[in-house]
Image (tube, rainbow, N blue to C red):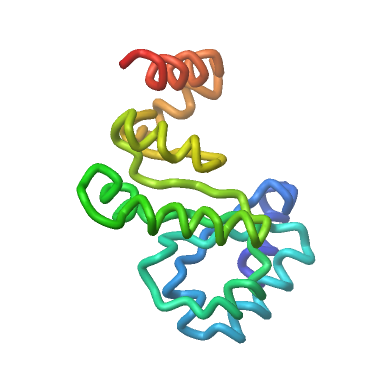
Length: 162
């Protein structure tokens, strides 16, 4: 907690611009402590995101109590959308749960248009994955910050070009 507070001050970053990702497994390892720490951070203005959702053993009670702003669906579930089975049903249930808890929904590992269309229709707010762009080096990111038009052009191209 102190490290985050000092880092925000040292780098002159407003707390509301920081989103901390905490994995579901980490949050549920010590749920009471996780709730307490995340509550203090959110009171400062920092946002929390529950990452890799579906891979741990969440208690729905603690999930409800965690002061998170978003839930990130693990890539393993997104990958299963391309296969026969219950993948779509599980993802739809996770999205419904996130919506009921008023959380923003991020789907990780989106690699094809079928996944993109399904997740968009379900109401996922943000998609991440190779369909939208490959991982970037620090130099590439710095270049894009200097010329932000590159970011939007590339993202639109990736979504609409296939």
